[in-house]
Length: 105
Image 1: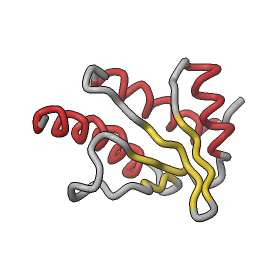
Image 2: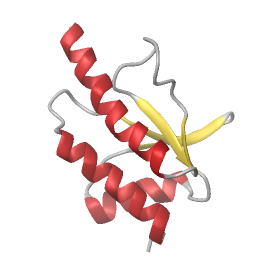
Image 3: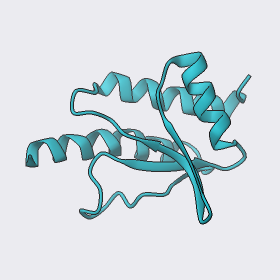
Image 4: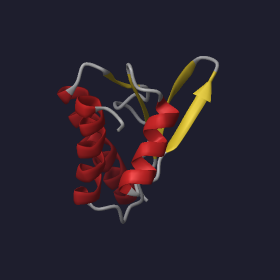
């Protein structure tokens, strides 16, 4: 169980820290430090509707995400599996950065 949690955190941090570093528009809504989460994380991109971003990722890139609307926050939850590869996480981050640079068209 400890190895699974470590892998899930590593995968989460791989995409989350990359997006956070690459764009000041990205807000990671889940604490990355501590033990309150393993692989789950939620993020928001200022200026891009989270529902539209989730639909664009699915329709154009076959990337499954979970857009969440809550009275206190909105964003997209990302939930990797222990079998998710680093390359898959990198493709996800690449596509989010593409959306930030070029929009959702």
